[in-house]
Image (cartoon, rainbow, N blue to C red):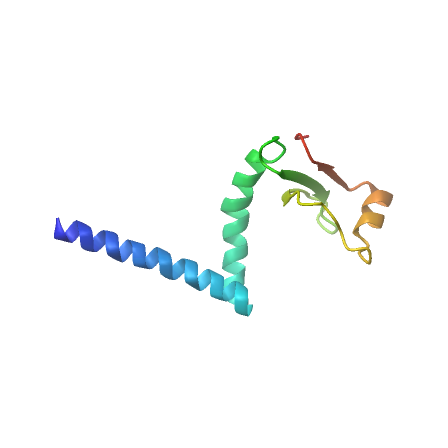
Length: 109
């Protein structure tokens, strides 16, 4: 029983250490660690968010866009808290001209 308790404590400490390390990497812009956080976000968080995106209760939408160089289609979940882009951004103009992005605020494609 004591061995199991020790194992649980060690695993919990490891999880807390990883989370604190990821938050520190984000806060202080530690590039090698940020790369790991980005990969984890793409592999886990975005996939889960894409499943729920577009439903009425989720508050998220899906932006579908085509890669500039690769031509590959990407689906990115975005939080709908007044979806805005900066007025100085070229993104709205470029996407309107080329038609390479679409946003579904309430339902999927």
